[in-house]
Image 1 (cartoon, helix red, strand yellow):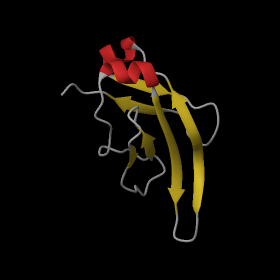
Image 2 (spheres, helix red, strand yellow):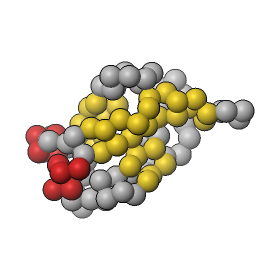
Image 3 (tube, one colour):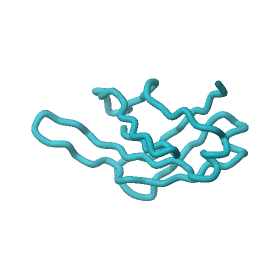
Image 4 (cartoon, helix red, strand yellow):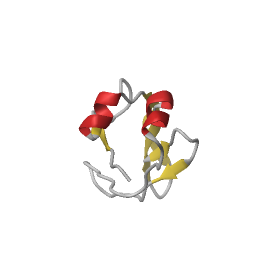
Length: 92
């Protein structure tokens, strides 16, 4: 998974060999105000030995104060092979 943080930082997570992958590393360190103002962008790619396949093209998702208060955001992309993806927010 590749995430483009609101501050423009590109974060690529470690590859996961699974039909239902989860990622627990890689993320953005930004303020709640940045998330609300700019949202978050992400894309999913299946990395294979020969070629990479796009699962979900670049998606932009806005983040509401409600999502931040709940500590998570679930996105159901309108296109691609991903049904839902959840982002967890933690306070630092």
